[in-house]
Amino acid sequence: MKNQRRVFIQKAGVIAASTAFLPNVLLSATRPQQEKLGVALLGLGYYSTSLLAPALQLTRNCELKGIVTGSPEKIPEWQKKYGLEDKNIYNYQNFDGIANNPAIDVVYIVLPPSMHAEYTARAAKSGKHVWCEKPMAPSVTHCEAMIKSCKDNKVKLAIGYRCQHDPNIQAYMKVAKDQRFGKVRMVTSAAGYFDARTDHWKQKKNLGGGVMGDMGVYTLQGARLATGEEPVSVLAQASTTRPDIYREVEETMMFQLEFPSGARAACHTSFGIGMNYLQVNYEKGWLKMEPHSSYSGNKGSMSDGTVINFPIENQQAKQMDDDANAIMNNTALIAPGEEGLRDIRVVEAIYKSAAQNCAMKL
Ligand code: NAD
Image (tube, rainbow, N blue to C red; front, side, top):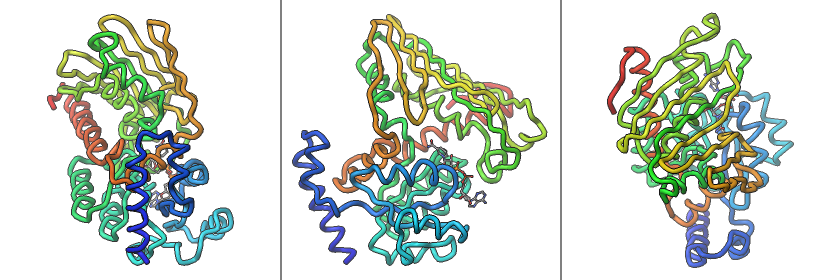
């Protein structure tokens, strides 16, 4: 059954690959409706409950088929809401049994970052493709292990960088690629919100908390994607206005990046301040995005009068459909594990810089 299903998915991939130039709406007509990837959400907290599960109902290529949870009291409501069968419900202990479940093709890991590496390895070993939320993991070592376990088990690993699937973000990435306004001189980017919680994993070091991996990756991605380059040097400073709550991790991080071309970035991220923008100054113009990394409504403008404001029905649905397409067609992912690793490499250097109060070379 499992093999039959895989063969069918591969066939669907061949059809889709041969019609790669067709718009999505025509393409979906060539793929049998029932042949969607079965997705199991692992971790049923805020993001799974409020964003991913509803978004899965809007996807063309995916179906919410299963859940993995350590909270049995959540199961009846999820089963009722999404029609989930008993055989597709797992807990953290019996999760590895998912290897024998042909209904599940993908495990989407939506846990605190310190748990991403362990569950990626277990899902990959079970022969399931892995989608993993950002930040990929607390260290480069973890990220490399995650990439290796997926490679060894011949499954794909995608990081949940929803923004990279948004045509509004893709629009400013293209400006860098085309050198529309010449070289980038300066990027200014900020991402934050006021987090009123006082006892959450985002405030705990051993669970992978701290704003840098959380909202900070949006500012870092803004700088990396707007320049199309990888930073060669960082200088960072961590701070908090609520030391009673942010005892173990930073509430705020400010950091500067230097890129090989000479471009620089000034980035600001915080759990204490609401902010969400990107400004890019080029040799011959500028581009501004505000909001820059929201779930919806990202938009911007350029110095030549161009407006960036593409409609997108649902960012997470687009992300999951793109990633499902890459699996079905065996094509490249938009944000594979290597992309998550690129960010964590910089995040590690940012933490070192803040701790040692000096610039760090990459
Ligand atoms: P959350 O605290 O709401 O949920 C975390 C889930 O993990 C809960 O179901 C909890 O029960 C479970 N869990 C298991 N072991 C745990 C432990 N030891 N401590 C705490 N929780 C434990 O968190 P969330 O906001 O849903 O975030 C989950 C992941 O999703 C994180 O990686 C986060 O960065 C990511 N996220 C991404 C986006 C995005 O826009 N891409 C948005 C929100 C969250």
